[in-house]
Length: 257
Image: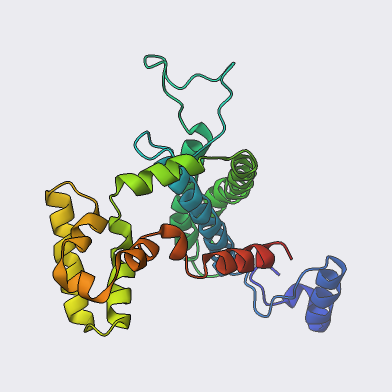
């Protein structure tokens, strides 16, 4: 009936409900009023918002890595017809990633009315209806759109390994400070002492605009424990990748099941 008691269908109301819902391949509601609880819509929109956030995270990372001062990866750019700016001809904007970030924020904003719709007067009021007619279809459509767009971005992503190498070189070896500290500890130096020693050398490398390796080789405490050949090995970024390749393989394998 109108309030969910089943009075209009008599004693077989629950059985009728079960038969109808089974035929529709839907779950049976344990205790409905005139409508079902809105918590399921909250869960749905939360999942969509989470997906949108993941897509925005990817898109933001690409946008940052595409910045001129980094330039390590970039969104594909159709040079013959795509224009980055009406006033700056040189620009190559990550248009799709920017759009994904903007739409993701809209999708997340729909969680608020979804929660508000959970509060109903008695067996039902209609405050939820107008909002749901907007947020439900738009959330689904926009989530589908940003996933489609990010798929396009990834398929055509441009990667610049040479720029990555240049950026590492421009950092004057500072990203390898942890590796040096770890090696000093392996050689018998206390971790606190090793940390302070490498920290001091790193600060000197920055202030004197020198390579960290050069500063380390000038330090008697360092050369007492590490020869130049050992330092060269430690300072090579290729030797400090950890299990990154295995982690990537695990994630890709899981996502391609």
